[in-house]
Length: 349
Ligand SMILES: Cc1cc2nc3c(=O)[nH]c(=O)nc-3n(C[C@H](O)[C@H](O)[C@H](O)COP(=O)(O)OP(=O)(O)OC[C@H]3O[C@@H](n4cnc5c(N)ncnc54)[C@H](O)[C@@H]3O)c2cc1C
Image 1 (tube, rainbow, N blue to C red):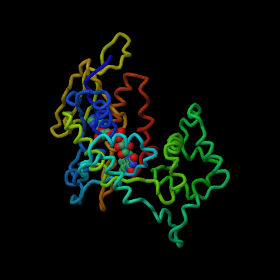
Image 2 (image 1 turned 90 degrees about the horizontal axis):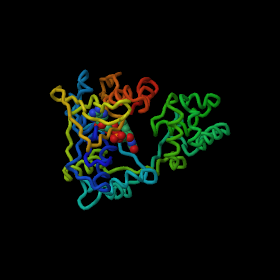
Image 3 (image 1 turned 60 degrees about the horizontal axis):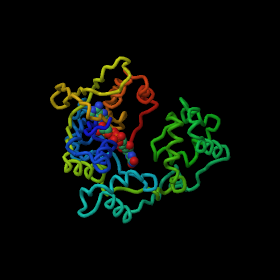
Image 4 (image 1 turned 30 degrees about the vertical axis):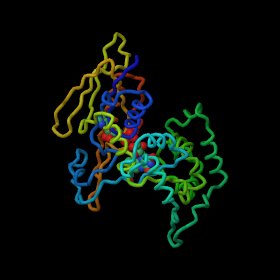
C-alpha cells in the first residue's frame, strides 16, 4: 500500500537521510513527516557539556567539567566509500558556509586541510616506527585473503566466530603493524565478530594501502553536528518536518490479524524524558513507521578526568524497542546477538 506520511523513530543520520529522500525523490510533503527522538544530539553532538550534564544516561555521575562541548571525535569519512553520504550532503545547504552545499563545504575544507598522519605507531625506545611495513607473514596473508575473498553466500561460516577464533592458528596476526593500525582506526577488538571484520575490510579496502598515514581520510570542517546533522536539521525544518525531541519510544502496538503475522504498527507508546509522562501516538493506515534498530550512541555514557564513564547494562532505547518487536515477530532478527554480551560488543572512544 502506498503511503504519504511517515513517523521516524530517532533523529540520527539514517532517519534524517530517509526524510530527505522521501521529500526529494518520493515527493512527500515535509509537513507529513514527524520525528520522535530522545534528544537532538544523541548521535549528533553539538550541545554544550552543561546541557549533557543532567542527561538521563548521566544522572548518577553529573559531569564535573561542563565548560566545553560534547564532541565524540572528528568526523572521518572517505569519498570513495561514502558515496551515499556525499550524495546526501550535496542535497542540503551548509549550516555554516554561505552559498555552499554541505558536501561542497566538506570538500572545500578537506582539500585545504589534507590528512597526513606522521606518527601512526610508536614503540618503546624507538619512537615513531614505520607503519608502512605492515608486518605480515605468509600465513597472515593467506588468512586475510581468504577472509576478503569469502563470497557472501559463505559468510554464514563465520556465524559466532570471533576475530580471535578466526586467527586462532595464526596469533602472529595480532602482532602486526597492520592489526595495530586497523584495530585502532575502526575500533575492533579480538572478541569482535569476524563477519564484521570481513565487511569492514570490503568497505574500507581503499585504506589498506594508506593506513599508515590515513591520507585517504576526509574530514568535515567542524564536528558531525555542525557539518552533517545541522544542515539536515535546518533543511528538514524548512520543509515543514516536525522534530519532536525528548521522546523515548518504548513500545509498538501492532495490528491484530488472524495469524498475527502482519507487521503493521497502529500506535506508538513513548515516554516524555523531560516530564516522565507516558504518551500514545496513533498511527493511521497512511503512515509508514521507520525505525533503525540499533544505535551506537543511545546508551553511551560520559566520564571526565576524575570519573569513569558510568556503566549502564540496560539495553539502550533502540535495542529494547527492537527486542519488543522480536518478542512478537520471530522474523525480525535477534537483538540479543548484538546487545546481550557487553564484552563482545562494547567499544571505547
Ligand atoms: C565515538 C564515535 C565515533 C564515531 N566516528 C565515526 C567516524 O569517524 N566516521 C563514521 O563514519 N562513523 C563514525 N561513528 C559511527 C556513526 O556515528 C554511526 O554510524 C551513525 O551515527 C549511525 O547513524 P544512525 O542514524 O543509524 O544511528 P544513531 O546515530 O545512533 O541515531 C539514532 C538516534 O535515535 C535515537 N533513538 C534510538 N532509539 C530510540 C527510541 N526508542 N526512541 C526515540 N529515539 C531513539 C538515539 O538516541 C539516536 O539519537 C562514530 C560513532 C561513535 C559513537
